[in-house]
Image (cartoon, rainbow, N blue to C red; front, side, top):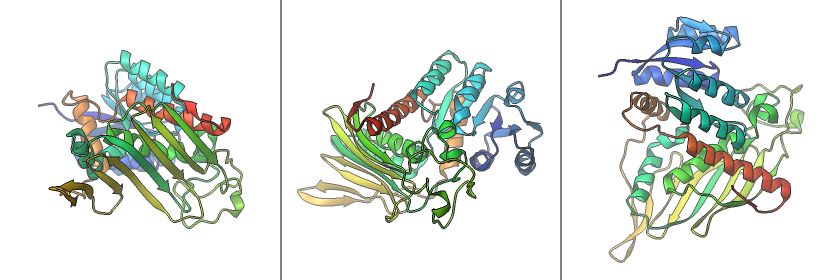
Length: 353
């Protein structure tokens, strides 16, 4: 039976600490090394989780005996660090989005094919228990042919780190499409099994973020705002995706709008349909014995998504299972997002290559 995996973490900010806590709780790894360019943040995380080896340069961490690394840094650094880690022979858990764009993601895929270690993309919502139940229903044919999906994530006021790297195109790659849409698109395609989007017609807007000092909000992830900073990404996006002649998907992915907050993925099939709506009971709408029927699957709704992801990654590193989210799937999501931005800029439907 394999021993505990020696694990390093690159990036000890908010999401890095979430990963560190999840891996500690999962109990299959030892966090042996940590890296961050912010000395205070590095010390706080390392002290909290008992990490001995601490570095300000990720290259020094990659030279240690850590067998696997978590890459939890701003998006602009994903490609550089992920490829370096793979070339160093490490297993890699790469936070979403995979990269700034599909071109960078393709470079990471190419590096992963040459590497000894495995690469898993941090698509955490695959670990949501309800999503896994729906995927199983679809895979066993219980929902028939999937023909339409709706991916909706609307935050009334949810711009993260206004004026910081989240809202700076050169560092983030985009706004809510990169931050949130990446999860919703991956989740919809993973549950439905539809992995070949062919075209998209979309429009993005920036209506709240550019008015930085007038932005009215209650709370802010990765805040407080930096009014000296930049907002050059979208804060609202909507559109329509085709999967050839087989299926379609509409979406609305929003950081800020004068609208009620809501978040769901809806999947419609010929034999069943459902809406995965965070916190609400999962119901499969179907028919049985000639009657309209609802099915309420029973499952552990309290399972921690990040702990499940940690266990899946450790198992993949030990060869017990494939990566929970592959690099190739991550590239597909990035191609879709690139096409959404291209469609909005051109004001027309564009093909997804």
